[in-house]
Image (cartoon, rainbow, N blue to C red):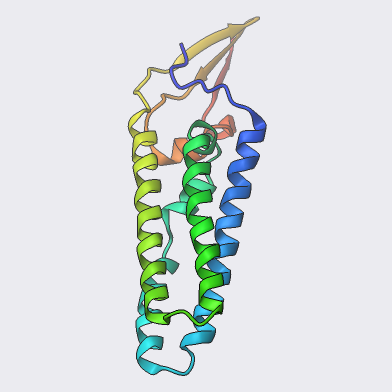
Length: 173
């Protein structure tokens, strides 16, 4: 009856949340160190600002961090990718603090951010395509008929799937 039912461990969901926040923290630290280092060089400052303006736009990470079902379904992959790229950012921050080349560090930021965004987009697209179109479901409880909305890949239904108050139809017999 429910094709998209997911059994999950709440700890996995919490691990995904921690991985997202750790990645964001490491990204912020890396950006701060880069900003400090490019402050004296106008060319690097311009190059860096172009790279950062690209990554500040609403990213797929924002969509994933707001979608609990996606996090639960793909928790292992998300944790793996986020932890890997978070570790890369952490190591690069340490290298940068030891006077490594700033231009290379900016390129690494750009490259790693793009790679992670592409991995997360692949997961998001896979998640979206796994939704199947289902007819409305009806069930009765002692003279009450409850109609659940159609399942589809509509983003509005997806984001609000656990708050059925606006989408549920109850009839009394």
